[in-house]
Amino acid sequence: MHEDERLEKAWLAGGCFWGVEYHLRRLPGVSSVVSGFMGGALEHPTYRQVCAGDTGHLETVEVTFDPRVIGFEAIARRFFEIHDPTQRDRQGPDVGIQYRSAVFFADEDQRLVTQRLVAELIHNGYDVVTEVRPAGTFWPADDHHQEYYDRHGKEPACHWPVARFDR
Image (cartoon, rainbow, N blue to C red; front, side, top):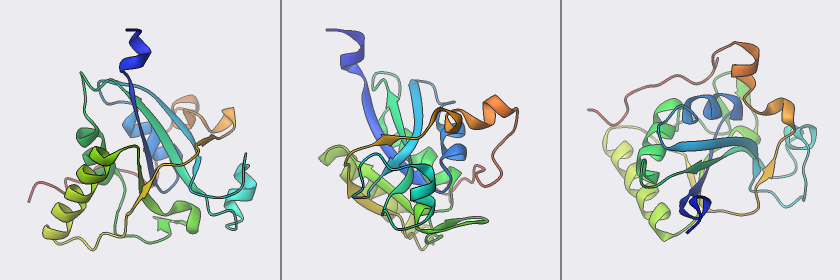
């Protein structure tokens, strides 16, 4: 079996993809995180088209990971802790439907894990608005959107870790 055949993918939308990418790519076992778009009907959407708000796409990251090192649940937990899953169509100062919170599940296991984590957050007192949707076509954003904060020597402005599961 080729090494790449053991890798799995997850698609997560939590506001501006730059911050989500920044935090998730630092997890052990994550081999890549690509910023892009998912959830809309338009093929090959551009950043400008998505920001206009009428394509239906969400700013999404595609996480490629080695399940022998890190599982989907650990990635999803981190995702829920680096963005505010209670904000509808926004994340901090970024407002628009493209900033909606969503988990695009690849299979039934990812769907069930996500639903369990959402239920745990609700039990902890959070009014979660994160959508749980089947994955569709992922469209990578232009190169200048990839690894944005690392290339510019900055840290995310809208994403910072909050321990939402430890209550």
